Length: 76
Image 1 (cartoon, one colour):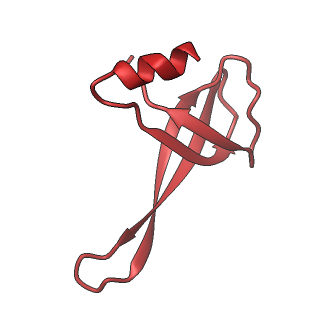
Image 2 (tube, rainbow, N blue to C red):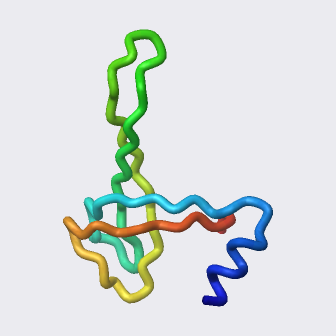
């Protein structure tokens, strides 16, 4: 509850993205592939764009193939 209240009081809400874990080989870090579907500016066809995010995972709980939700933070 406290997290929801603080998120509402922030001027800009933090982005929440969902993706698949593609690598868990590092210690306390996983690589998450986030797929965005965007329309091509000229041709109008829907195109998939993939972005790889390096995500902190303290407990090493996420494994390859898991669907995870990522919330942005300030740069560390």
